[in-house]
Image 1 (cartoon, rainbow, N blue to C red):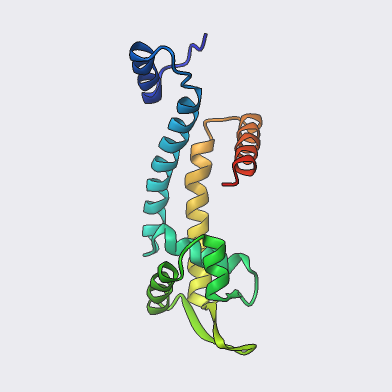
Image 2: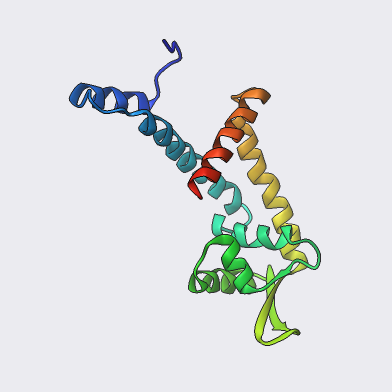
Length: 166
């Protein structure tokens, strides 16, 4: 028997047990908690990135360019594929980030019809600061687990991602 204090998911599971004792709610227990963590930490990440004048989605664009290493350049198509965004959704983000001076679009020298998206110096400075702010939020959340527990959780979640194709 688990002696740890109950969380809101426990209350939901208990309610289901009362009205539908035939249900196996194991998946609900896991994914209810994953969803709650995602939502709560997503809100915290939004606040961390807002200090830099960007949204989480805009951070994702800047971070994807940053991870591509110098010269921090990708095509809009590469960005869309990496971030699983439609080209329309990507265009809106790129427009805003370009207006803010965080990236620039230029013709692709290897494809007359293509564009390249490149981080500016300001974009590079901002994303390096924002990634640290986001990591602080995530590290604080994980501080409630020891190193072994965090490793186990990461491994189990990796397995689910791989097995489900997420």
